[in-house]
Length: 130
Image (cartoon, rainbow, N blue to C red; front, side, top):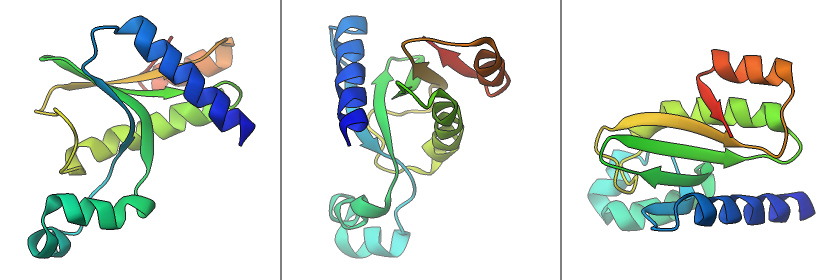
């Protein structure tokens, strides 16, 4: 739990420093919401009902041309690469994604340090490492 809190602080500091003007959101839910629930309850209430079951990306940042999905990892950097690959595939199936309008998706991993073999894995997975 302490590590997760440290990672939350790390991503928060990164977002504020990198994009002080805003246009970003943290702890964003991804993934589909069953259409039958959306039809019956509306998108907002259906999203709230399924909130506990949906994965969350640490942060998103949107511009007119690019949509960044961002994970911060302090220790298990390799897991961040896998998470971002998975999350990137969920973008098109997330009906309530804030400010997504078909922009190019950029997967970004924020880490305090990097070693060569993990960087190679990130390159293969098309994950940008900062």
